[in-house]
Length: 299
Image (cartoon, rainbow, N blue to C red):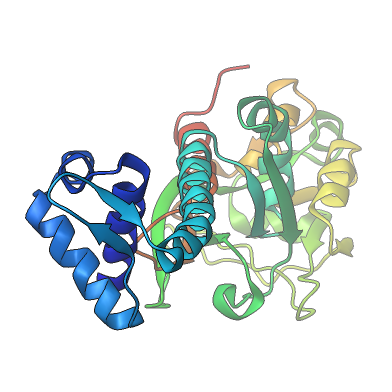
């Protein structure tokens, strides 16, 4: 860094033809400029300026160094300006890991995000596996539940809850379940996690002496989209996150049941590798998700 400051003092003095003018430009004294250049000359073992009481002029060695250093300083100034522009206008590739169920949550928001930040290129990986953000080069991940990796920073994005839903036609044929035990007499549509093959539990709360039944299933699949469609088509009752069925509930294609038995709400958080500086593209992505998930726009 001392050499860099010496080079900067040298370039400014050569450009302005004066130690006093260079000092004014750099915000230091003429004496400090002179001493900095003298240290540089000692390090290079070369005289860079002819000095007199009235003026300074470059030696042959100084002229050679000046031509090289001027190009370097110009590139540094250009890089500094480019970084400042990046901070003002977020841009670049952003690699994000999201849970499979997040597809229906995030997809409706993508046009708005692109309109706000057209220079950000999103690379979205939808998977229920626990990715290693640092090792796999992810900028951010959206996760549910408790977070334990100390290498990561986190921010709450918003709550969600699971609910039991079915179509009006299905309930007209089969009746409404009034407590969890009634589910034994209904067609259950179950989700199977694609990464480990396990069936998703229907986490109903116990009220009084009513326990969650051991459910059978009429249909299982590893796609939230397929479960939403099957429930809306009247094939049975599904256990789905509220954000996945918002449209269907709003237009009446699905109805909620057993709402008093629903488990406590969950939460989504954004997590990213700990760093002193948060890139603008990451900051605006997290801010956008928090804004839209904590305070969703009304349809």
